[in-house]
Image (tube, rainbow, N blue to C red; front, side, top):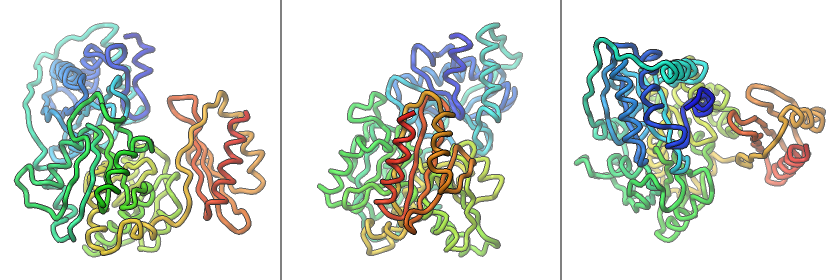
Length: 470
């Protein structure tokens, strides 16, 4: 492992790399020691968990060895979802590490780092320092601490499930039939615990039809990436076949959830964010909290989200894209909820961390307390037409951005909060689009929204022509 190679796998918010060639036990061992040096401190404790990928146990064990050698003690919660690690970090007030590559293919693995109380870590807030310390250890070797740490094992699944059920009670709902696609990922562990009765908790009025609940890091049925429409086809068919009320699709580490309505159509993450934002604002108002509740939405979310927030007496806070950044903003602003276009949903009452299962509980609660089918229920929260994220390979981002300014600048307002956002009107119909460069690939990401399908398609196609001709 060279310095260049370690630089390549430490991303903006986490570590991702090919197993065997990039992310090896040797690398995770020095990252364990570096995490203790930079974040935890010798003599203190941290939490470690891992997903169902074949390499996760070995890699996490090597990380634990490095952490122990650096003088920290470890609570190993073993097989878990990412939000279970956040739960442990928040409950025990410890830094935490999760071994997962989320939705990436089976040839990858990765690490997500958190400070105490599930606070995210990015390159700018400690991850670069961890990387650099790990490089030093690879080059110069490690010396064990005078007082090595100890490791203990714990299981948080029951407490995690109980905590979520208490946040969003579902016992008084009308009966619902749910199809859940776990994609052979960690939702195969968490869904039976939270929505079922495998842990001996009370039965909920839910009939669960499970798909691909067997934990299998080779992903034999389809990739664990519910943002790719190809990975939703089986679930959409099953929802229609079983006349289900709703479908839920989780990613590999079960921290993201995509919703399918009773007709088999995907519900956009912006729609889910608007629905949950309304529920959370009304909940805190009912508790007598003073002031306008703040709700975060990143700049790619639909305009509907900010409208729903304001209509319910909340204060929308527009932010950059990126989960560590949004976690920081949740704390800085005291926001009660945050939503991203990528199906990450953040909750003040879950330490500001993202939790796809908790978002799913809110959607189930909203649906189960209404006689309206989900396709009609979501119409209120889906007022405009979104393109979804479209990626284009570009060789020179600056050239493309200049071309977009030339074509759209005279008929739009422009802001540069995160990439460039152009907004304007066509024949009285509003539109906006955002272009952002990928942090890790030669890609330019495009998101478009408009008041009508025709205007959205027109702006989308015009922008793509400019982007792909450069």
